[in-house]
Amino acid sequence: MKKLDRLLKLWENFPYYIYTHIHPETKKIFYIGKGKGGRAWEFLSRSPAHITKLAQITLEGYPINSWVSLQTINLTEEEALVFERNWIKAEKQINPDLLNIL
Image (cartoon, rainbow, N blue to C red):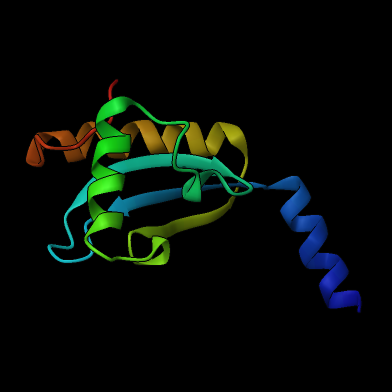
C-alpha cells in the first residue's frame, strides 16, 4: 500500500502529461497536446479540423486507444507547456499537416 500511496502522491504533484494523436494506419502524428486526467481521450472539445479528423478515424473503425499515445508523464504544468510548445515547433518544420495552432 505504501508504494501505491507514493505513486498517487507523485501523480498529485506532477499530474500533467504530453500526448499525441496519431493516425493508426500511417502512424503519422496529427496532434501534440498537454493533458491532465482524461484530456488525451476527449473528442468534442477540439477545433473543427481536429474533430473531423478524429471522427474520420473513428468511422474507419479504429478504437480510441489506437490513436492516443502518451509520450511523457509526471510533469508539472510548466514543464508540460514548455515540452509541448517546443515539440510542436519542431514537428511543424517536418509535418505541415499537424493540426496544432501556435
